[in-house]
Image (cartoon, rainbow, N blue to C red; front, side, top):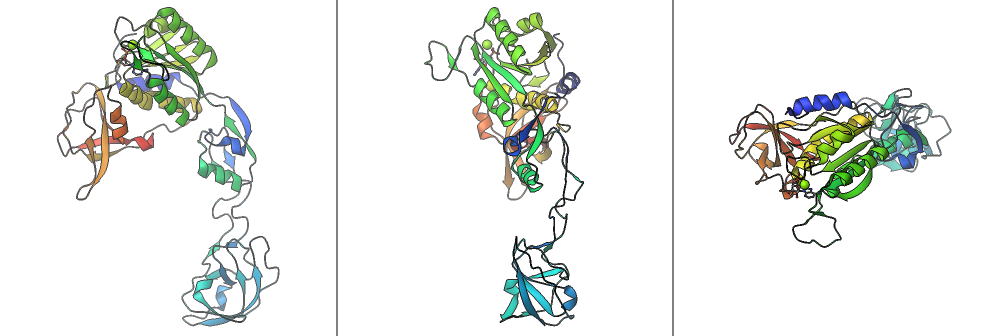
Length: 405
Ligand code: AMP
Ligand code: MG
């Protein structure tokens, strides 16, 4: 299929073709970091499980405090974290309490130790106390029975802590997605080998595997494949037999040595292979049996752009993520940008703080699709949609910060 389609049409096709993988496995908590949750986590308990102090200080009942006046209370014991005070508080009494220690019966308020005057076991408290201050209540962080984390969520450091705080020693995660990658081109040379004649070093495989590993994907690296049909077909079929997705770079354009599409057509199916997009026009999406296929262009910037806007959402869909929308906002553009309506253009920009205007964006400069350094210089994509025309200095543009991918 050679019809040229828009970015939005391409995303509709990808969404229609990609369904979440259902494979799950049970792992112990320490092995879950970076993985995707395959179950909703319902809290088996309240966190905190008992009322405790948020400060080192003294616990007492608020009713002891007369309005706008100081009060002296008798200190009758101590509550430590792990060793609570077992007695009962009577009128005119308080206890010494440490951070995390249980609040005793008949107490509901804690005053920081820095704010009291201590005279033997007499504790003087000045006015201005609020009832319940410095007390962490049962279930105030997580209530028993509530959904703490949802299936499809990625487990980072914060999520690991929350799961541990619930005492969950093992949980169900999705089996990591497996992606086979190769670079294609007679001129492509792997790092560690010396360049001969008109060879260039392979950068795409390192970019792509970096982007995949960031997503928690298992990468199967099939290396560099030369521009001949037999080798390409063999690599495609090997990838299809071992992985959930095959990603290649190079060889999808209209040059005489661009064989990927032809080989894909012979062994599988092409869903689209030409987009109204710059950079990334020859992006090819298809399948080999049940394995999804993305043929990325060869130019290194086009590789990153097409990965971020098409491959990444596809992988997130395979992982079962429900929300694959991008974090975006509009800011004034400090440079004029040339743009033709009728195709989406994705430029590299630098978001920065202007002392007068607030957040603004400017171009990284040269936007050639081989200028990979623009991805290191920039911190966002400037997204100029299908219909938009050239941008004048000061016009608002949509940006997608790299940190949000
Ligand atoms: P192609 O689509 O195969 O014609 O490649 C387009 C451009 O990207 C050419 O300049 C290639 O040399 C370059 N290119 C292709 N693959 C890679 C790669 N793996 N690493 C760096 N540059 C590449
Ligand atoms: Mg090539």
